[in-house]
Each structure stands twice: as structure tokens, then as C-alpha cells.
Length: 198
Ligand SMILES: *[C@@H]1O[C@H](CO)[C@@H](O)[C@H](O)[C@H]1NC(C)=O
Image 1: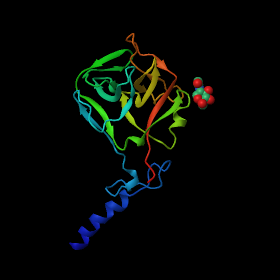
Image 2: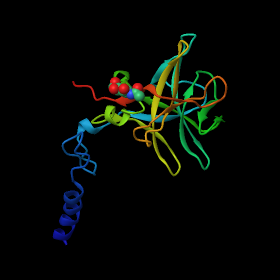
Image 3: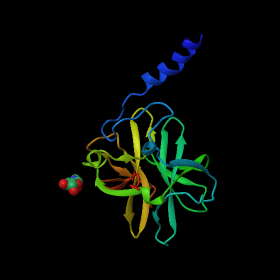
Image 4: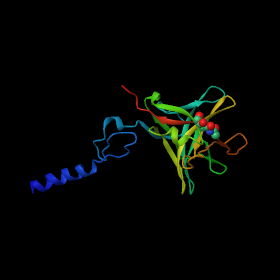
């Protein structure tokens, strides 16, 4: 009896501890003994108009006010990325047009702020820019693939939006523009999470 319970504890642990994602890290275990450096300190909080203290800034709008990174689900479409404007409980996302979302919005939070880094890239080379980086996958289009968080500078302000990462070599950035359209932009920045070397 003792022998049985001893092995039933050990065996799963042995088999579950296999290296994965060898591109960026040496060895990772699929159990609760994940190496300390594997912990990624970002998460999504419910957003109802108030900006949490640990929200990640996406940039500043034309008035110099911070903007933030939002996420919302759209039925039968997917999970989308948008820009949160402090005080506003509405967010606009792009999906072959612009859709307004005003419920169940989440906001990207994490720490330390210095771990959130924007890298300059473009639609052709995005997949190369993200090699060996921890890109923050923040959504998906149903039936297509995952999205990353991007931003551009437009007429003196930041515009946060989605990057169609799943179209490798043609990974355009999209944002809801002033005309209510969703242009594809070739040059942009992508958000990655970098562990700080302590
Ligand atoms: C994308 O960036 C790379 C590296 O800077 C550059 O060589 C390439 O021409 C750019 N592609 C486009 C379409 O701008």
C-alpha cells in the first residue's frame, strides 16, 4: 500500500517534467515546479472605467493622457484587442469594420512596467522580430489564429490595436481610425514581455 502511493506520486511528476519550447528556455516542467524565471507577471483585470494601479500604459493620446490596452470578446468573431481611454467604458475593436464594445472589457496589467517593451517591426518581419521573445498573445480571431498587441503613432497620439500575427509575412496592424474604418498598417510596434535580469 505504501509502495503504491509512493509511486503514484512520483511517476506523474517524472513524466510531466518534459522540456518544452526549447527555442527560448532550456527546460520547463508542466507541473507546479515551473522554474522561477518562467513566471510571467501579466494578467487581465476586469475594467469598468477605473484604471488599476498596475495597468500597463500603451502610450499617450494627443492630449498627453495615458491610454491602456483592452481586450473584449465579440460573439462568433473572437477575442479582440483595443485601446482603453481612461474614464470611458466603451472600446472600439476592428474586425472587418469597427465594432463598439461596452461590456466585459478587460485591461492588461502586470509588473514591473519595465518588463513591457515595444519593439519596432513591420508586417513582413514580425515573425522574425518575435523569435526568442515572449510576445503577449492577447486575442484570436475565431477560425484564424492569434493576435498580438500593436501600436502606432498617429497625428501626435498613440493608437493601440491588433496585429494579425497569424498571417505570417503579411501581419498587418489594424486600428479603428477616425473615419470608423479599420486600415491595415504595415509599420508598427509590437508589445513583448521581457524578464528583467536581476
Ligand atoms: C521591414 O523591416 C525590414 C528590416 O528593417 C526591412 O528590411 C524591410 O524592408 C521592411 N519591409 C517593409 C515592407 O517595409
